[in-house]
Image (cartoon, rainbow, N blue to C red):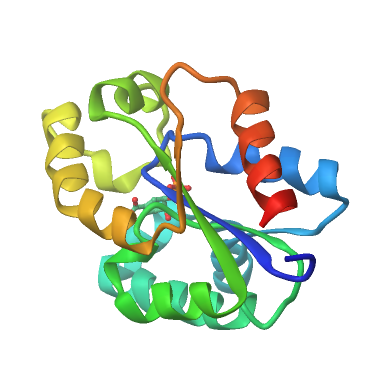
Length: 171
Ligand code: S3P
């Protein structure tokens, strides 16, 4: 599996970015964050893209960034939480990568991100209810897309990395 990409999916707050960065260091692989690539391409923050151009526009840019990211081999791809909404993204990611889903309940994820200001999808009167709603729709999509499900609840970044590395090494 040496040249396969490692692809991390999951809801906001599940630890994708921290785990990606740690895996990148451990394996000496480049890390590609779809959100950071989108921001670089657009020259504005995710928050501003949502505000100024809307979610549909953001999803379009996200799809293009994923098409580009999967042209790489042997990198870690840290995906935005909504990539699974478009089946074509999942197809593209699976072509060159092994997909790990970092999984947790909404209540746990909420505690992680409740103070963050940069999650436009959670700007709701009741962000926890919004998260539950989004997670309910997305959970089956994450599960279908995943080659492996990694429990993220109450686990350290190190523990998640160890588990992913063990799977990656033995596959
Ligand atoms: C989104 C998750 C965010 C970012 C955007 C939309 C989503 O990424 O792509 O705000 O739809 O869940 P993270 O999961 O990295 O926070």
